[in-house]
Every structure is written in structure tokens, then in C-alpha cells.
Length: 142
Image (cartoon, rainbow, N blue to C red; front, side, top):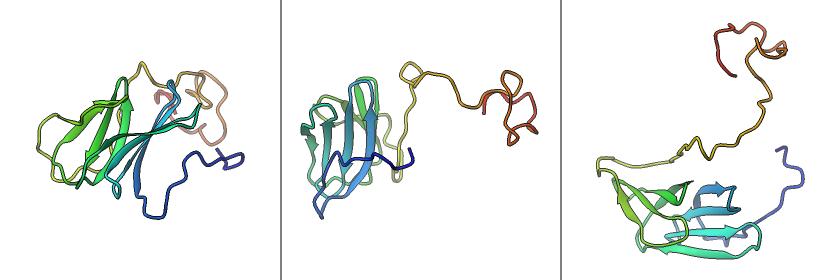
């Protein structure tokens, strides 16, 4: 991820205000929310097809994340989190309306986490680089 071989997947116009991005790696979909157009959109990274999932006049969408079958969306004009099916449908309140202003959101589902070998592991398991040699062996993973 050093910037080489990068490519543009979506070209926005000069008035666009894409605040949040969420990647669904399994389905090869990239979601974004735009505070200027009041839209939640998606691009299929395989075909390049773009769809607007929701347009809500007067919204100020700020952040989006995808977990399982749902998108979780924040809106500065709402004091609650919103959720919708990632394939489309209505935005619905999710949880209590008790926030002042919602900013970014990131969710975690351990069944969807990237799995693989870590580059740096516990110092007792593999040879440590000099940067990590002085850490206590009680630290689990770095």
C-alpha cells in the first residue's frame, strides 16, 4: 500500500462530498456516503456498475460501515445510528436516540475479519525484530 499501481474506481464531480467509505471485500463492493448529494451509493468493483441505494433530502451523511448484510450509517442531523440492508431498502433507526452528533463509525465482526499470518507476532513465538525485542513477553500480539 505504497501508492504504486493505484487506480481511480469512482470519479466524483466537483460538488461531491464523499465523507465515508466502507469496503465489502467478500462481495467486492465499495460503499460511500455523500453529504452534498444526500446519498448512499455503491460500486461493484468487478463490473464498475454504480448504484444509488438511498437518497434522503436534507441528510448530512458522515460515515458508513458494512457488517454482514447491513450498512451502518451516521448522519450529523440525526441523534441515532441508522442501518439498512447493504443491497438497498429503507434506512431505519438502530438503537436509542441519545447522541449529540455522530461522527465516524467502525464495526467489527470476527467472522468477517481478514485471516492470515501476522507479520509481527508474539516475541516468544518467532524471532523479534530489534524494534520489538524490549517488549515484555506478556504482551499477546503486536
